[in-house]
Length: 138
Ligand SMILES: Cc1cc2nc3c(=O)[nH]c(=O)nc-3n(C[C@H](O)[C@H](O)[C@H](O)COP(=O)(O)O)c2cc1C
Image 1 (cartoon, helix red, strand yellow):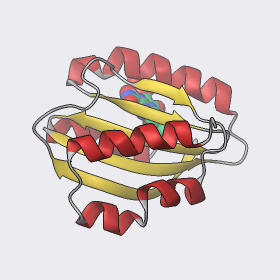
Image 2 (spheres, protein in one colour; image 1 turned 120 degrees about the vertical axis):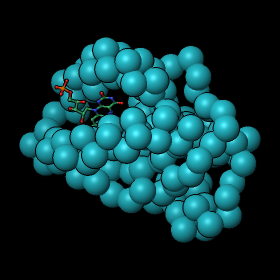
Image 3 (spheres, protein in one colour; image 1 turned 180 degrees about the horizontal axis):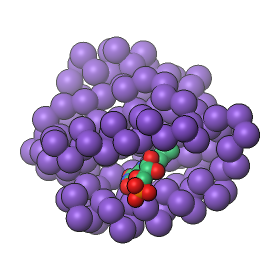
Image 4 (cartoon, protein in one colour; image 1 turned 120 degrees about the horizontal axis):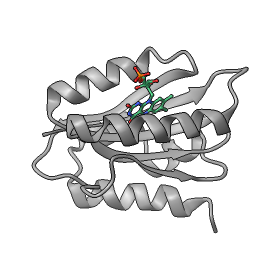
């Protein structure tokens, strides 16, 4: 089982709402067929997506997402073999997080290199994802 987390940004000229609707439809129909699960946090212009599944399938989906012209890839902030899924029940859980941006992501995940190099545990990653979601609601 493989897990990745990446950041990307909405392209100018792309409308967020139809894009989210399309991602919801595509992930609901395609992800289960490829044993993919995960979570997508988004704001008006920033995405943070965690994708889990068999490595080959994660690689294929990531290649497709990277080529999606509606957004611009930022950084791959985490990738690793894992034993368990963090979001086993969601083909792609999608949550809007008002104000999510790179500053906030860096603040919560620290510098992404540190995050990758420190080999965070599943528990730590889950906590960081929750922090990111709650950070901006307060
Ligand atoms: C931020 C972002 C996240 C996405 N996540 C998924 C996903 O989890 N699953 C999926 O099938 N497509 C996802 N997509 C859409 C893909 O880039 C692509 O449009 C879609 O898989 C193409 O499906 P089709 O070949 O059936 O038209 C995402 C796109 C963006 C911009």
